[in-house]
Length: 312
Length: 262
Image: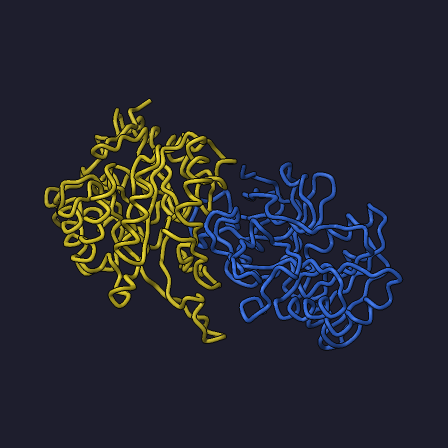
């Protein structure tokens, strides 16, 4: 068996396979399929200060090799999470990474502060793909200064490993990556969903109740791999790569692009055992390729150039 | 755990309706109203990831190790499912969700179109329990009532309605519910599945007539197990329920019958 352990700075994982926020609830629904302790980590659905009922239905639209969703961060709020969900996850043996979201910098900070009082959280992942209600609904994650303010504010109250999840809906993701690292992000995760829209040609109505939503699944994988590679060139912090992972080859692709760990998201919906299965399949891949550690894959596709092929 | 089950039959019944029959171990514990989440692609070929998601189908009937499903081709997923042949394997997850709350009351089962699917299994159970029940099925045309014959196996009390009058009475199934419900000596419980406007109309009737009503909802689903909150429907108290895990069957009175479900 190959060595699957990975270190993302202070955050040590038994293997690089995690599950992406918003696709795994708080673990309960998948715990009947396998032990959550088999995963590198469980990244929870977004936790907000207050309970959120989410967006109006319909919230899903299937698109070619992908899905659009507009769930709207439905969650029971941080107090409920601390009373019911975190203890459950801890009993399950999972390494717990809590995804947090907010409508204002103050809300992000308040959730992080409350979570800092709890035991057993391995890291926080800050979802900066939310609209800032105090600044005209501009998404935190698309404006470098706002992204920095959120990151710095959470950094002040959260002493543990801090992950910032980047939005792909920007012109230059490397710019955002550098901005949040400067503000205290220790690890970057990317990509969040790509904003999209689908219209029913019969009813002439948007397919989502929220009109627009986030695209995920294999359809977005090339975009995600490109962004992980770009960010890996731009900053020195470890990366959790995600976007359309459905097979071990996808995991390998993200690692080669520069990710130290990956998240399985939409793929869980298709195959509930996928994330667990990928742990074993990654081990097999390494063995087959005569590698002994995951480390040997990470960032092997560097700046490029060395592999350019000529036509002759 | 997902099960790889063997297909025994996948037969076109007419009117774009198909009956799929499988040999399955895991589905033996299913109850009426529960559903199964299928990967529709061929298991013999490398996965294409398109369509990406599973397709939920209500259990149509269960006889020993044979589970059957009634579906209609409505899009890419069901079209691929129709291509599966007997002898092939199919990846399924289930049974999932919460089924009908079967009470001691005599029962009136109301199915609109392919929404009849979960009602056959219910009729089967009611017959086993020797409870009185009547089935009222509607569709646009006789062709789209190709499943009516399956119900005749469990009951003589079968009323058919078509919009074009090609078989049974002419009209919408909901037009005849008050009349059929009035024929029960003891007040019946209603069990229904079909298009949302039909269910909304039944909810209004059930409220007015003060009859209990369970409805089975249809929704686009991603995970099917309650994790993603994609199939949410609005409840009367303003909160959201997951059709896959909190339903698909709900007592009508908990649902918000405003524009979202109607």
